[in-house]
Image (cartoon, rainbow, N blue to C red; front, side, top):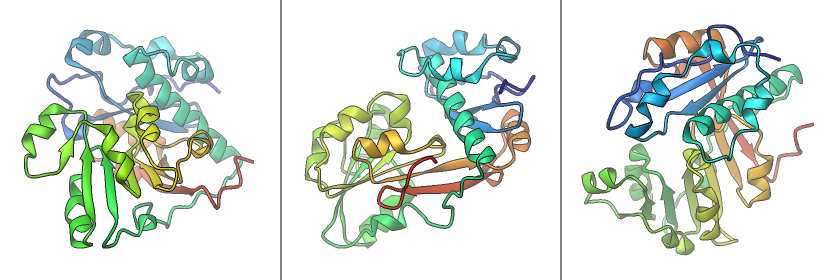
Length: 256
């Protein structure tokens, strides 16, 4: 199970100072069988030179599990690449074992947001603000990006994760896995709260998250790795090359 030559990264190594534009926010790893994993380009400007120096050919022939095992070492570049490798490996296993993955269920619908709920939103999901408000629910947004906080003074937005302790439903971006903030976030969640982690980078098996108290994991698996890599290289929308997934803790029986 090695990397396919010439298809390790999907963003042509181009780094944008001040934050990646929407169509250049992700990179990907593709294996020989075209099982492909996505990761978010979550890097500060000072990492630009190191990011731009990455060469896909340096990874050809290496074992993806060796790359994956570097996750958690606090090196931002290696974290990014290793998460993509983890996703690719998991999707290789899903593919070869013919695992049936739930794709018709929307993880947001499982939250059943209604009047009286207090929603903790970790990471700003702009498109969900109005639906939550229309449902009559109270909202608190946890955001680490100070620029987003400044741009949205009309929102109940804070950097204080302790605010989550009063929420009965938590919607959390999957990038918290990448920026190592998930443990802190979960430490502030009530044991009775319904916790959902969602985002394109959640393309892995949910077992570790369920063990930590997460109830729902909604992500994406890649259905056409070759096409996705082409679109990433062209900075074009790639959503149609993926399929939504939704793992629910109470229904999940394990990987095998």
